[in-house]
Image 1 (spheres, helix red, strand yellow):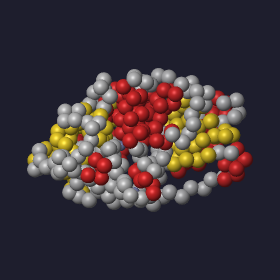
Image 2 (cartoon, rainbow, N blue to C red):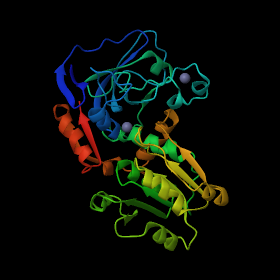
Image 3 (cartoon, protein in one colour):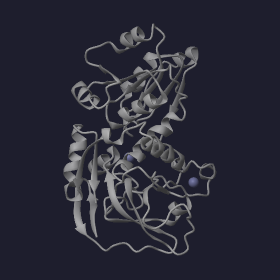
Image 4 (cartoon, rainbow, N blue to C red):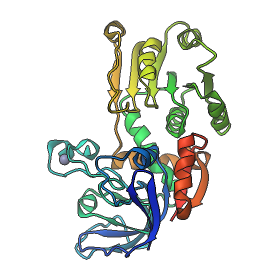
Length: 348
Ligand SMILES: [Zn+2]
Ligand SMILES: [Zn+2]
């Protein structure tokens, strides 16, 4: 089969390799599409501790169930079904996993990181993933292409699970990439009237924003953010702030613009060697602010993401800039890095 093999930093090659064999306790998927994630770009340029080359990455996967191992009991799916695959696979034994938070298991092993991912014609869903019901049937009316948006959207849903966002909330999102716009669309799906995205790369923000006309876009270079948000909220500040970017400044600014009883999500992580910030903790104290983290997602978030797309509340097509053949994956990764596109999907 054809696969994109990652051999090391900036070294990915399309090769013809042996088609994987489905074990008795595994499920084999014929991969149809796999979108390129910002994390794939980071792995390509900087490596990742759980990705040991030669590796096959890619975790925003859709495909067809090709074979179900003979010991597998999985009545929810059958051969030929359109499916996606939950990325985070926990150990299944620790107290975090027992509560269903496989994304936070200290020994989490993800598809497309530790396990082989979706930039290949076939994929084996390993036994621990089968046990965790990581193979999810797509809603009937959802295409395999649209289904690639489920994974990133599920991560945003996991982040917003903590935020108790309501229709009347004023929401500010830092970061105008695909994740920032997905967060904004989720708020719109809840019914929020005022959702703002701020980004210093304003040209890009305006370009992407054409697909999302009901979201307010602010140019960080031209405004005093705090003054502007206070003006827009009659001096109360934002109810919810989400930092969808790896920026210390965004995290610090979030506290500057948040209002009383506000909820903040530090959704985007910071670079691992530069992750200490200084904040005025009295803002948290006097305004009763809550700050939450978010990392990856779980099965329930995938199900909700699939429902939101299939019901039309969120348009997957608005996020997909381009579909490319696997032979062009390197170019696709470069285009994502340039920040010039929302999502690029690889057809395997
Ligand atoms: Zn992703
Ligand atoms: Zn565990």
